[in-house]
Length: 141
Image 1 (cartoon, helix red, strand yellow):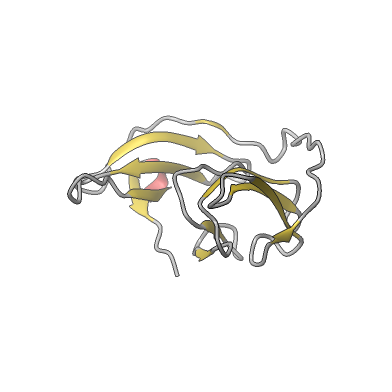
Image 2 (tube, one colour; image 1 turned 30 degrees about the vertical axis):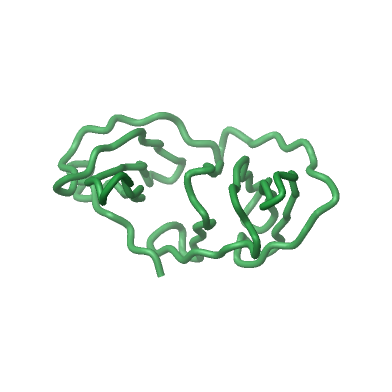
């Protein structure tokens, strides 16, 4: 799994993506390069408010994060790595899918944006449902 610097939080799921919660890193400005090596161990890079890169690690699947002095080289096995997927299917009104990824085990996820709230376009996590015919927003907390 890779993250994005679009978010000021890190999403995590305890049940294979059926529901999601979010966690934050105190003082975080811009998180990027999120990588989970397995269900427990992962790393993320944060750009702090004084523009310094700080590495954080988790050992509980992303619920809690602590500073880490280094970031190991991780090779993600193909058995857990997603592949690009079709964005066909009904999308919730006002949303536009940016990209979609299908993972082993059958779950397909997409990142979507819209509609505009002033100058800002909110970002949504979608899951493919209805036997591949419809996208559904995934609620947070």
